[in-house]
Structures are given as C-alpha cells and as structure tokens.
Image 1: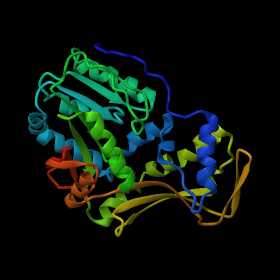
Image 2: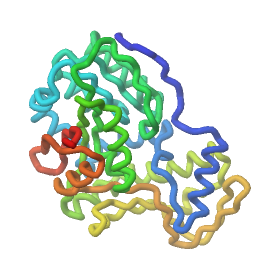
Image 3: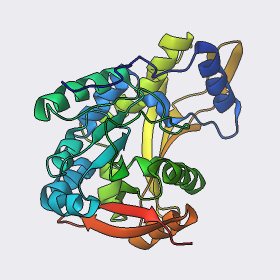
Image 4: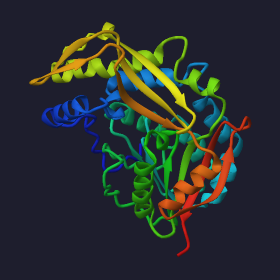
Length: 324
C-alpha cells in the first residue's frame, strides 16, 4: 500500500460552538436554511451510498456508463504522468474506472471531509493499484488547500470533481469554487468535472424522491445529527422531506417542512416553526452545455472536451485556463 502523508482524522464536523452558531444563524434567518454539508455524518454518508443504488437515481448509473464508454479517451486527453486530485472522493468507485486508463499516474490525492469513507476508499484503491502513491487529505475542499508534495514531478495536475456536486452550489459560489480550483491546478493543469444535464421534470424529481424513502431518511438524518451533536429536540415525526424541480432556476430545491406549528430548542434559542414552513437544505443545479460553458467562463476557464453517457443524461467536462 503506497500511502503517503497518512494523516486521516475525523474532521467531518466543526467544533461544537461553531456548529451551533451556523445552525442558529440559519434557523433564525428568513427563510430558514441549513448548509447541505450537515447531511454527511457517518450515517448520512452511508445513506447517500444507498441513494446511489436506487432505481430512480440515474446520476451514478449515467456517470459509470459514461466512464465505461469514454475513460480511455478521457485518459488520452489528460495524458501521461498526471497527478489526480479528487474533490469529495467519497468511496471513489468511479475514480478506479479512470485510473485504470491513466498512463503512469504520479499520485492520487483524495480529498474527503468524512474520514471513514476516505479510509475505505484508500484501502480499496491500494488493492487495485498497489504501486500508486496515495496522498489523502481529510479536509474541506471548499477551503484553501495545501496540496502534498508529489513523489515526482507531474506533467500536469488535474482536479477531478466527479458526481454532480458542483450543482449543489449556487452559480456565484460555484464560480468562486472553480476559480479556486483554477489556482490549484497550475498553469498546465485542468479540471475534470461532472455536471448533470437538464432533462424532464419527471426524471429529475423522481431521482430525489425515491419510492423506498432513502432520500427522505437521508434528509431527516440532518435533524438526528443536530439532536445528537447539539442537544436539539427536533421531533422527526414533525418534519418531512420535499424535493421539487424549479425549471426557471434549473435546479432541484430540497426542503425540510414542518408538519405542524412547533418550537425547537437550539442552544439558548427557542426556534418557532409554522405548519408547512420550509427550511432549505440543498440545491441541485442542472445545466445545459451552454449554461456550464458560461459558468466556467466566469471563472476564467474554457471547456475543452465534453463527454456524455449513452442516454445524454450526464456530462463530464474538461476545463482549462482561458487564453488571456
């Protein structure tokens, strides 16, 4: 197992006082909202893996189909001697499909806030690629990163951002993140990013409202986490999940709704909820190819290549710095 800088710590949550401030500020706002990273405690991460296996959740299947068809071509575009820096690596199932085609990769740098999925991914990857240097970072990829020194000089650094996580950011924040990535990739580097595409409302909404109720459990697990970590008293039976597609904005909007008039203790604050009051917990933006090219341009990036799955549901796009 070629693992360097093995400094994986459980950093999936900020200190209690910071977490409490974030939650209190969000619940006292109008309208109420909480950040989507609160989904990903250990249970939330496990539930998300189950979501990816649901028949309605097309995104993972489409991305795997895309890689099965195009990974060789993608690797050819990236070239040999790549250092692959992966944002939000999770269990890295899709990453293996890409690494199998890369020629002489310098290192894989998985960046994952949740420590246990990171450990598991590293163990699996070292089995498949025993000679691949692995340099994990258990940090928040939205913050400034200090990448580890590579074991040898790479031909280029490619930041890999799979899935559709870029869509969880509003356009302004997504552009800011892409600008940060542009600085981290270096002059000769690139960004390989997944972007979910616009399609029928029926298909999109079904993906976020699976019949088995896994997404509902995932959403409401956020309240369980707040009860456990902050001593809140959310009654899970008093809230419900709702995910609807806003066609004008091009995004799924996920809310937690209150089933009745009620009050919840959050630290020293007694937070009132009205019946049917909605608390925003996540956006999932969908793009046309033109939408995403425009977003990339605001971050000083240009789309060099686009790959689609056979059904045209999902895209992987390779971005490089725009010529000045």
